[in-house]
Image 1 (cartoon, rainbow, N blue to C red):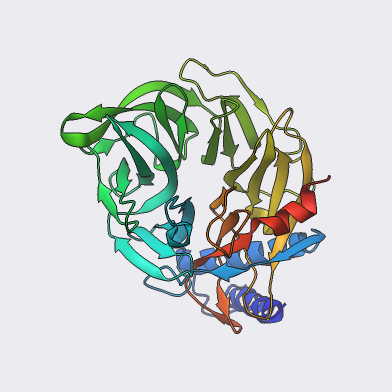
Image 2 (image 1 turned 135 degrees about the vertical axis):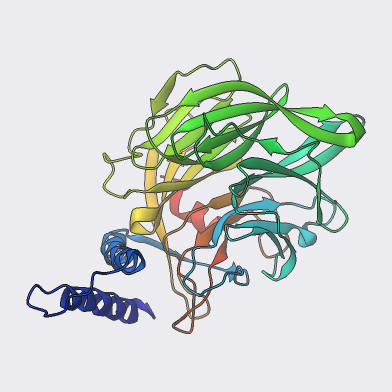
Length: 387
């Protein structure tokens, strides 16, 4: 890899500098600031995660990447989650809709070029719903969690050009007495359309999406589930009626996605400490749906890899892969959000696309602002289809 040695040297330099500053024999020891301590902790975590990543045998490389997400500094944690919108009338004009935790929603074309930025707030997780029924019309929607005002943002996608327009009837605020710091998000559509939102305290709420006057949308709370610790990544399967929730330091929970599903849930085998190929945190979740088969993929942030489970049955674990450097595009580390589509997305992605947020985006060995990486689905399929 192009930048492992440089990173390791930098990490060790920072750690060594901290030890030197804190030596008891130093005559005028200056306490480290909170920011310095965080840098040291992150550096140690990075080295540990890289060591664990080396144990993942299956490797892939990215086929394309987006431009960088805007942030005040190069090392800032800004990009988080992505959702892929497929333009069914013209797949080549499909878009990638990403979140910027520093200030909004960013839209890219399939070449990775930024098309638009919507400065709506500190946006965390995002999802797309196709064919929301609005009278005689069917709309494609984008929904996301907004940590600036603890709310949910809803947008309508213009099918002609992929632009977004606010479609919320009012400020869709979350009750912060129940959900502490709104975080994860996903849509679900069965007999009625729903969305799920969760918070850092493990609270998960399900809302029915309802049509309001003047072609706007509102929400109705229909269910609350409480997990024991911080949650984020979620994905719902319309065909099977299941919701999957990532409890970051526990694993993946499977439960009914229906509003009357209650609190009954089961932890996926090999989705936590029982799997040596998963290292906390468990972060992004996404489904590849192919007829009656498919996969559930989970980003394992603690070892820069992706765990793959069968979509159906008991969700059997089938293996893990990592994304490493190619000659043209750097590898992927410390992924937050992921997304998958299982239908053609333009000529470059004839069997679908897998996307991952890149926490350490490099260009020719030089650290850049974060971005998102794209992979052709058939590369992943070749690793796991017959396992």
